[in-house]
Amino acid sequence: MKTTQNPVRTTMFFGLICGLSFIPLSLYSGYFIPWPKAYWMILCLYVAAYGFFLTRLSKKSPLRICPSLLFLFPAVFLTSSTAIFLLIALGIFSWIRSGICFQTMQAKRFFPEIILSLGGGALVAGLTPVSAVTWALGIWLFFLVQALYFVWFEKTGDKMAEVEIDLFEKARMGAEKILSNP
Image (cartoon, rainbow, N blue to C red; front, top):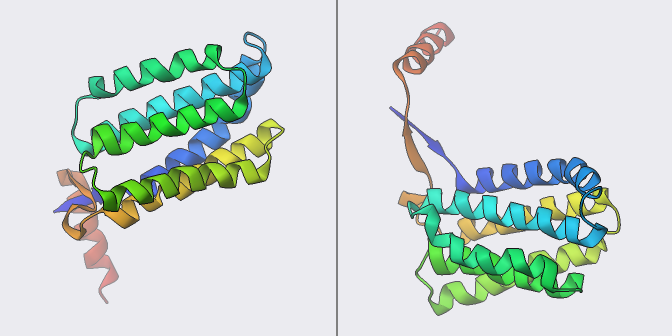
């Protein structure tokens, strides 16, 4: 018997974790790095973590996303505008997802990738995040929109990665099945 992991659910949960962790990270990183740079550095960490999740999901080597991340981290210190940094981050996010992890870059994937990336960014910009709480909500909203990528592009047979269930879990499920039958 096998259980499955759903990338849609995992992306939504990852977004929730990122949103919840953004508030304490932004409060404490503000002591070491000036305000906008601290937020941008946290966003870089989230893009990197999500990129490593995508490499695991696509069964690619995690080293493949390192060159793209080498463009993102210097952008924190080389840009002076939040809008420019976020556009760079969205571009690298899309590059990691469609260019490195899921490499079937066809026209049918290109336009929805732009719609999801820019649409998610536009929704976050529509929130006009000015505090750590609104940034946290915006990050979660962004990842909720990004979960649509897996809804649109997955084949029904490849929707979920299979994971073996151990014998104890199998026995527990068998006992629950026996007890639930009257």
